[in-house]
Image 1: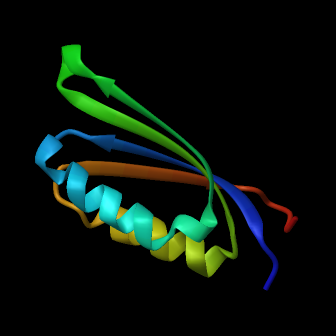
Image 2: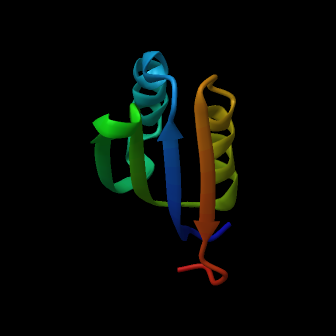
Length: 83
């Protein structure tokens, strides 16, 4: 199974969920190429943008675990071609 580059966007609306999000990201650290985290204090949310490189099963597992965390919203976009 070939690897794909993906962008994962995470919005954390319940800041008490941040620790759980970071624990999941730590578990999948080998997939993460880059990460930008922005605390949007005026709106009381945090936004994380990830660039990941992995096969579709790995990326789906990561986004699935993140999406099951209460107080978070997750969206991902994957390259069509394997790279």
